[in-house]
Amino acid sequence: MTVYLVGAGPGDPGLLTLRGAEVLSRAEVVVHDRLADASLLDLAPPAAVRIDVGKAPGGPVRQDDITDVLVARGLTGAAVVRLKGGDPFVFGRGGEEALALAAAGVPFEIVPGVTSAVAVPAYAGVPVTHRGMSASFTVVTGHTRLAVEADVNWEALAQVGGTVVVLMGVAHRDLISRRLMDGGMPPSTPAVAVQWGTRPEQHTVRTTLAGLADAPIAPPATMVIGAVAGLDLAWYANRPLLGRRVVVTRAPGQASQLSTRLRDLGARPVEVPAIALAPPSDGGAALAAAVGALGDDAYDWAVFTSANAVHAVFELVRDARSFGRASVAAIGPGTADALAARGVVADLVPARSIAESLLEAFPDPPAPGSRVLLPRAKIAREVLPDGLRGAGWDLDVVEAYQTVPATPDPALLDAAASADAICFTSASTVTNYLAAAGASRLPPVVASIGPVTTAAATAAGVAVTVEAAEHTIAGLVDALSGALAPSG
Ligand code: SAH
Image (cartoon, rainbow, N blue to C red; front, side, top):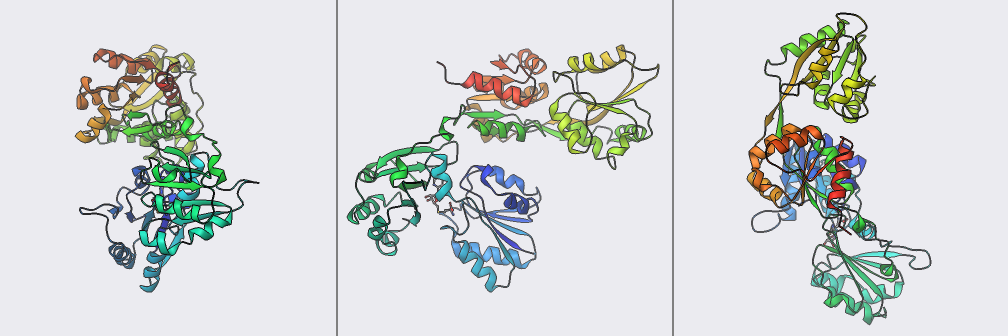
C-alpha cells in the first residue's frame, strides 16, 4: 500500500537504519540498486519479488524506467521497498521518484539513510567537522562535466573555509582541484579519497589538493578536501581480519551469527550453503507425540543440542507452558539463546558446548523410570543417548529435523576455493562441504569449532589448522583470528 524510499547506507550492512530493516522485513516487492552487500536483500521475506534496477545488459536501467516500475508496483497496493545507496535524497534521485509517486497518487514514505558523504570519511578516520579546524561541510557532486563547470561555484566554495566533500567526482578531479585552487584554496590543503568506503575493500589515498589530479583514485570514491583530511583517526582499516575472505559453510541457523562476527573483525564472509534443513523422515509424527507428552508432564527433562531442535519443537507448541514440569538443558549458549528467545531459560548449560560436558553436568535420575526427551537431528552422535541411558535415565530420542546436503552453486564453490580460510561448525558441514567441493579445493586455513568436527575432517583426510578452545561461534572466530593474524 506504500512505497518506501529507503536509504541502504554506503555499504556496511550494519549501517541500514532500524526503520529500514523493519520495512524491508515486510516488503512484498524490493526494487534495489547494485547493492554493496547482498545480505540486505536477505532481510526481505523469501517470497518478496526482487527487482534489480542497478545492472542490466548494456548499462544501468534508465531513471524513467525505474520510476515507472515504482509507480506500477505501488499502484498494485503491494508494500514496495525502493532500496537506494546511502541516503535517498543525497544525489540519489529519490526526490524524482517521490515526485512521480505523488503525481500518480501512490502513498510513499522516506526512510533516510546514512550517507556516504559522512560515513565514508568516518570509516577512514576523517571527521567532516572538527572544532577549531572546520565549522562546515559542503557536499557537492562532480558527476558530469557540465555539473562541474556550470552548476557548482567552486571558487566561492574555496572561500567558505570548511570541508568540501565531493561525491562522483573521481573522473573530473583535475578540474575540481584546479578550480578550488583558482578560488584561493591553498594547494597544500589536505585531501583524502576513499574508495569502497565502509566495505572490506575500503582503500584510502591521502594527498593534497594539488596532488589530487594525479593521485591513483578509482570510483566509487568519496573525496574530502580541507584541513580535516589531514586527521587520521584510522580504526576500520586496523581490524585484525580486514579484507580476509572466510568461507562460512552455513549450517542453517548458525551462518548469520558467524558471518556477523567475522564482519565485525573486517573479514568478508563467503556463505556457502552446505546443508539444508528438512522435516523429520516420519513427517514429524514422533516429535508431535513426544511434544504432546511433554505438555502432559511425562518428562523430567527436555534436552536440546541445537537451536534447530528448539525451533522444531516450538513449531508444535502453543507457548512455553507446553513444557509442563520438565527442566530444560541446552548444550551451549547458542541453543540457550534460541530457548530464551521463546521465553524458556535453560536450567542447565554445561561449561563446554559438547555432549561429554553436558553428561558430566547432568543430574542423576531422581527415581527409576525418570524420563528425558532428546529431540534432535536424524543423524547425530550416540555419546549423549548412551551416557544418559547409562546413568539410568529412561530416554526418548526423537527425530526433530534432518539435515540434507545442499547443492551449492559452482561459482560459489570457486569463490570459496580461493578464500583465505574456511570455518566448520559441525561434522555434517564438513562431510557435506567436502562432498560438494572436494578436499583439494579447500582454502589454506581450516578452522574447526571443536573435537567432533575436527575428527570428521581428519577422517576425511583434511588437516585442521586450528580448533576453537571454547566450542562456540565466538571461540571459533577467536581461533581463526589467531591463525590468520599477520605473523610477527
Ligand atoms: N545517495 C548516496 C550517494 C549517491 S551518488 C549517498 O547518500 O551516499 C554515488 C556516489 O557516492 C559515488 O560516486 C561515490 O562518490 C559515493 N559513494 C557511495 N558509496 C560509496 C562508498 N562505499 N565508498 C566511497 N564512496 C561512495
